[in-house]
Length: 439
Ligand code: MN
Image: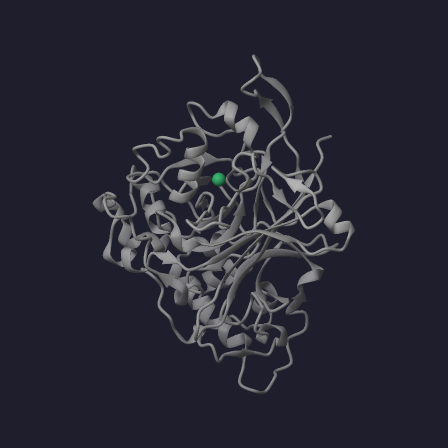
């Protein structure tokens, strides 16, 4: 299931797009993530592009120029669709064939071919949109460190529920309010009740938080009634992005029992615009999280030797914050946490397999997210609720400001990248959001 390492991962590959050859770029020729864009100020339909250095390769123009001719008609058509859904639906073999062709098109052996007219768009000239039409969105809770830290705040003696080590826990999120990076986030209102209050009131959320998560898009779907076996699960995953699951903690605390989060999460969810394929991540696969001595093994339907040995992804994740005051002073964003996706209790294959295990059908473009990514180490907690211990130990910013939770004017920036000796760095770009005041 894990895609293999091939010529497209060769660290010696160079592109004729010069910016793609810089060491610190997120988008070298070995990455080739897919997104959907529109030229700024242009009313044309959205189109599919591939990030390369600081440019976007326009797949519609590539097809018009005859550069995709060796691919099947169906695949060429999928490349010129207004969203990634048709390409996702074609499954992993089609996206592999396209990746190989794009790698050939973009590589240079020393001579720089003149690029076809209009085939590249500088990123600042493009508006990046949602990569897919997302039919359904499910958010998991796959970090045991996050689940334990949160559990401790509410139930110090018994932080984890007894199902946690058996069931990949999730709730069904709202797809309609998923927005691409750079979309401002309006501070939500809702019903909340402080413990010292006798009755709830309706008003602006007082405890606004972010959640650092990794999302993965479903590629080929499964039929209703046909579960996906763990051995095939990754064949149904197109690629990954970063997710900020903005959360209104006061609304959440009051509403979550007994059916889980609802309006505390559904006001906005931000995703990074580039979908990094599982193929691009092949060099960075690692073993699944090693369970502690005494923990139960996953039930057989959630276990395979391949997933145990290579089901993890060594993806480094960062959260940064910049307040209005920091912005006014020209300061750089301040890092709140640094961690890795490697320490998740459940793998992406286990999450997908569990989701379909009752026969539930997943469709191309559906988004599954990991839940907040926290590691065991200090400084790696993926939301303010954990970092500030529910607001009791606020974080200091370089301006002298403090944050227990987010304030209006705060920018939250998520970054993700994979680095490994002998391979080109593969980055995810940014998932960026600015909190705007309630009307
Ligand atoms: Mn979440």
